[in-house]
Length: 161
Figure 1 (cartoon, rainbow, N blue to C red):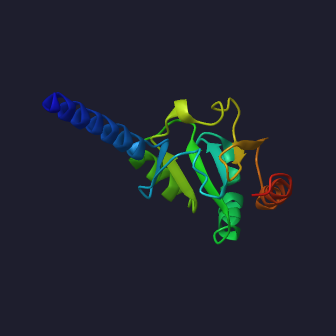
Figure 2: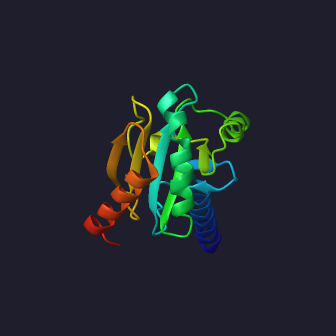
């Protein structure tokens, strides 16, 4: 009887450990810097997710504005991450980032099943997630640093921490 109980306890412990490790290692995306993350884990930050493609002229045109926005929010509770609509691999994405001097984080290995929104049909598309990981704003078309800042400021009033 004691032997069976020990086997059950060991089996349950192994199962729980496996579930914990799987959840710990689960990620919704990986950035070019190697960071793994989950969209639902805002970590108290506002998350601005920009969808782009190299073939999208307005997407390329807004890169300097996204760079400016990223610089302006570097020491704040706002984080900008861009995702290639074409689902590129790490090497291809790094080449595009270098070619267009993208100074913000880019995500690859994005798990589409875990996105907090539907992949946009129109580009560029920008989504703003609250610190709780909820989509609170969807912006279609080219954005400026000034417009993004205004949206964030308005949303911080509407959705305080």
